[in-house]
Image (cartoon, rainbow, N blue to C red; front, side, top):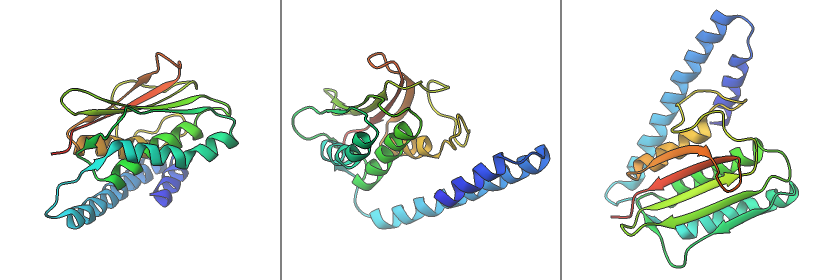
Length: 194
């Protein structure tokens, strides 16, 4: 997706409005095609087995992966996990990609030194919510992200990856303002493993 992101940014930077609109439509079509190829490949890999992983393990591993960057930026990165496993209806690689997208957005769009917190919560029915929140400037929207809409210098692809992961598990993505930290808050609601 990185080359597609570069194409989108180049297209959005064009001065000619008609040319910009045409190229953005072409990039949107390319994005849809790439997404379909990825979905097809994932279906082929998973044929015959339901997607599932332990969200606790994946979240811990991804936060550990991002911790050196947080330290380099002077950011306090905290992790809150309940005891025990949190089985969800999503492949570990997909959940890792969603978390990477959310944490990557956080570190890219907040000033150095911004506090970041990742929380995992389970409800009594087994559904899991993974929340990524920060003390930065917040998001220019609330609710569900609009697919392919560019905001604040972002292509929106990271949120789209996270939203698709949540939806594939039977859940959803919600975005808003963090009551605790004051900045952005993105919640991945994930369905329990079957």
